[in-house]
Image (cartoon, rainbow, N blue to C red; front, side, top):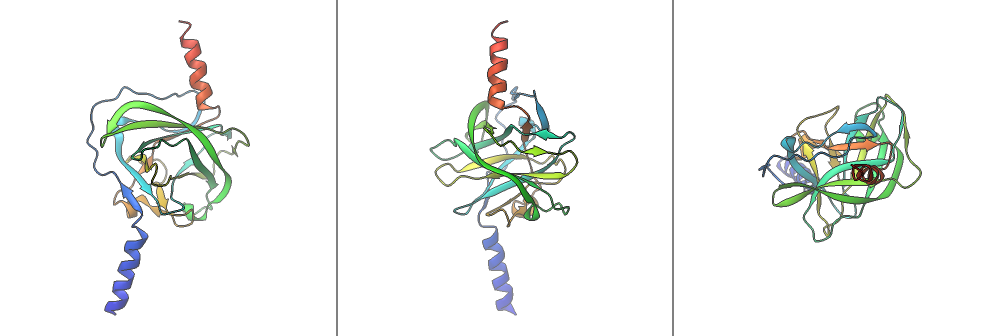
Length: 226
């Protein structure tokens, strides 16, 4: 019996060995940063004062984090925005993104993939810092084959973590909208953040029905006229 218990404990520890976080937040100041809000069809907006942690779940060749959302209006998604710090020497230039539809059990391990792609991204320095790292807004503009989503069903946005050359952490809050975020080494091994990290977390993320980069460029041109 003792041997069986030991094996179970070992297996449990291995299951969570790939989950890592940045630890307690030590805010370095109060940010006035505000990302774009035009054409947002779903928002869990970044607020520096609500920042709780940065998390990643990685084991080669995969590592994923996911959070749920429900649209109030049917929308075609052209842009995805979220927030990171990265500890590697190379900044991410693209992300593997997935949108899955929930099976009705609020468990992302059972979602049906409705769209997936590797999407180019640009980083915007928010001016905020924590844990000794710059905090970046990540703007991923979907170039084609836009996911068309309906209002009402629960969906999941899944973000793929990079390898150790980047070591990216997705920023999270303890303010939960809908259900908590999950993470895992594959898209069928998601674990609730409250289990992996001891605290229930949610991502900061926004979904757009127009490209975020185009929006910023367009508004920048308009503002330059005044």
